[in-house]
Length: 161
Image 1 (cartoon, rainbow, N blue to C red):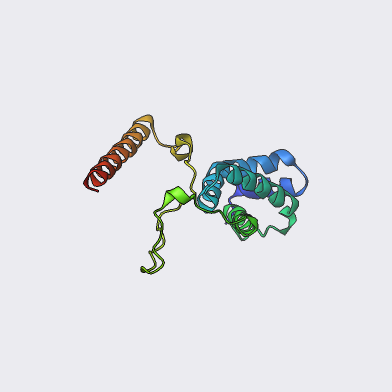
Image 2 (image 1 turned 135 degrees about the vertical axis):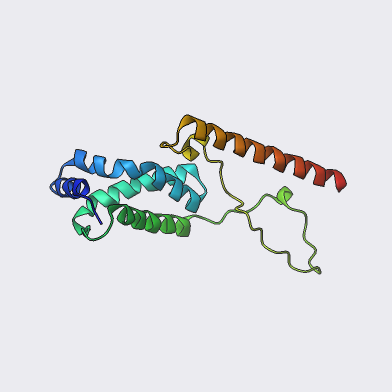
């Protein structure tokens, strides 16, 4: 459901007020970017999808139904654009050196569970804007500690091989 401010912004945007539209969509930019990034695994593709999302929302604003959350409507548009992008994207091949050569007589290996083509997300996109500085610092430290533990464990495993 829309609150009174959102109703006012949507009505003004539907009347052609571009500033009202920007005020309506801008609070969702960052979270939509992260959502699209998670679907596509590419920062550049996510940025393009968010821009396309704004264009489609602006062009189709007259189809918005007031009983639906504006945020949910934007997510629906973004999801469709992401799925279209994934469908049009050519399949990527893995470099030959990334995995050992498979034995054709051996059993089929289980598919990898982690995303293979995920680009690193900048740290500033992970930080919660509403969190206080101490909470952000603790989150950063816990991520650093987890990374160091993962490196240590992987180093110990490679020494045994």
